[in-house]
Length: 238
Image 1: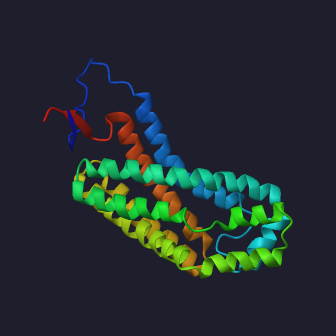
Image 2 (image 1 turned 180 degrees about the horizontal axis):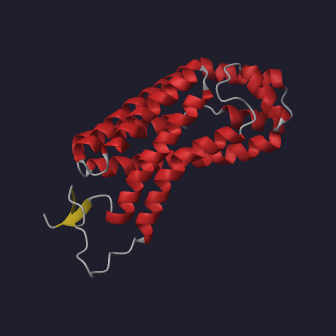
């Protein structure tokens, strides 16, 4: 038995025939696709500092003044790190079942970017750890800046930004060609991460939030189709 891609959907039920119920595993996959992007919005709203803030000292000071709130945000950041990797995998498998090359490219780019985001040292976790051990804010800022000066986090950051932007575009093209979901879903996915990056670069946080909102909507529509019909992969005899 081997797993092979199939672009065919389950045909619509004939009149008088009961529609197949949504299977629990499919429902879980659909939920993961939506919760991944939504975690970013929730964590950003919980974080005590402005997400477009570029001064490390200001971020550390805001966290120190709101440790309880920051700890809640840190848990959501953790869920985001896991959820986005899982969501990118599910979305890529869905596209791969219909366009193997685009799906694989989207997985390597978008999924790789999601993984790279977890490689760079987290300001949130490092600052909380330092404050918990009595490290002064000045020293925490030095540590964070030292981490930023290393080549590894810099490469991870570039991979993250380039990966999610081009990965979203590639996956969106795959959706557009597959006709598995409405065309606007594919365009929303293609616009989501470029819009998010523009928000960070310009300091307009509303654009950054809008980017992840579009991602949640696009992934949500894909999740809805998965809940109804599955990812598109079927098991067949060789």
